[in-house]
Amino acid sequence: MVMMMFTCTVCQTKAAKKFTHRSYTQGVVLIRCEGCDNLHLVADNLGWFEDEQTNVEDILKSKGKKIKNTLIL
Image 1 (tube, rainbow, N blue to C red):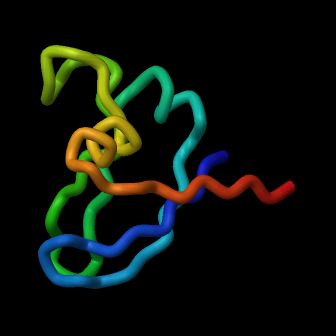
Image 2: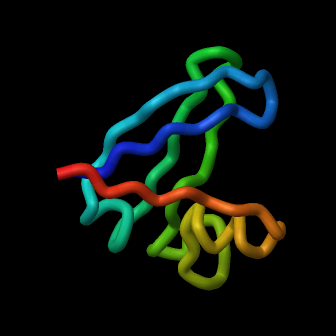
Image 3: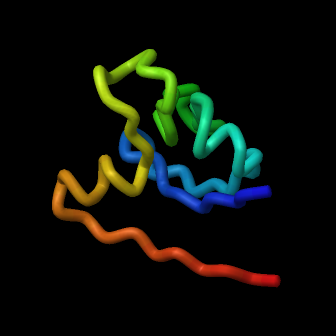
């Protein structure tokens, strides 16, 4: 299981969402903001939205932004 904490870039609502590691690495993950109902692309490994596989880490790197990864067991 993967948990992601994020701030919506549209309305600044902060949220935490869970999804499976398999969907993040092999499928498509979209998260709906509870504040404004905007959809955020987290991972697209099937090419639904981009020609190549992508995930939130690649998207943020391409925009020059940093992501903090934390592993808690």
